[in-house]
Image (cartoon, rainbow, N blue to C red; front, side, top):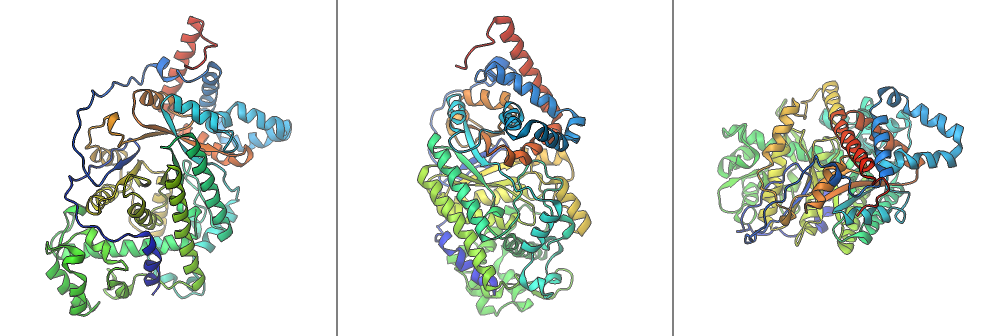
Length: 567
């Protein structure tokens, strides 16, 4: 079966299971940004008082900016808030390029939108900005902002080809998979309804190798500036998404099976870490289903694999799908509607298995390079039909590379109903296995698309029902007293946005980072389009930023400091 080949392929990335740590339990990360939590505790030291941060002090917020940069920021943010301009921005860019010619058009963009939102064209040209921001306490999360300019039809065709297996194309497997984890032509262009996340479409293995080389150059560029930088990567850039789709279905069905067993034992509706199955009752249920013999089942649940508690929690359950157990040959679960046993995973062809292995190898190459130069990797979250696989693969990399310090960071989207459970499970797993948990908490970038897809295809909406529910999800994860000296919680904003937050935090000693895109002018235009559209949807925050920019400009005019240099 395919997953039996999948798990040995993962084996080089999975160290042996460590014994349960006796160190104090780690704490969850707040929603402020990416955070790192060690699986091992340490003695508390006497710390200085938490410094006050004034987000309304325009002079301090823009101390790092020259006057002409303030004027450009005002212009760009005001244009981004003009609905009529945004509605026709693509046509205006096209006409401007024709009238001005490429050279003058590039200069105009660098003086305005490009110069505001993008750091430069290549790894060398971005270095002055990175060093300047670092001098004012703000680090960088590098991202090569080049995007492929595909038509909707081209994107749809690529998505359908890369998310459908050879078996399904031959008509033998499509109907056996959950609707959520099938490719659907109506949602083939994953850019639709998404304005704040870059999208990769699979072309071939050579293109994935090219993306890996780009990420490697990002790592090197970040390493030249500091020893605590970040870069962001997407796993859909590193391999065929069909693998992510199918592996996500496996993980989701296996987790669903756990909750089905929990309901039979009267534990429906409990939080993930509070749900514990009685082993004896679980063995009886699995044997009755005919999944395996009683002797085989008893081998799964031993003190070596599950401890001596006599119960199985969701982390124990997840570890059963592992090359270290004998369960991999019994990858069947009952269908909730029919009651029939079904295989967890469709078969892969030999070429598809090679593609899967290459994705894992590319991840490993990037992590090793990041460790070598002292840069941390943030694995971005993506659509929910890819995300279970992305999170699991990221977790396996954390097990290998986060032993001494957090190097790999997973991303959790707090607009998802299961976000809190997923974070608490990750934190607890790091505690048990004695490695450092690293996480980036975000609202999420695919809300409209996810809701539309769930409604159209007919599965449960994975998104929290209200904005208030997402806020509540954030606050559940804010059970941590923040202090700059801890360096466990990091704050992050986009380059060109919310400087009145980033720089006061950095100057107060908090670890804070700018998400820094770079790339040639023409190749980052899709990124700039999304930044403009995103800013228009954040009118309240942008209005406050413009007010502070005006205050600082007027102050410099009154005091004769229009030509001051940042210091």
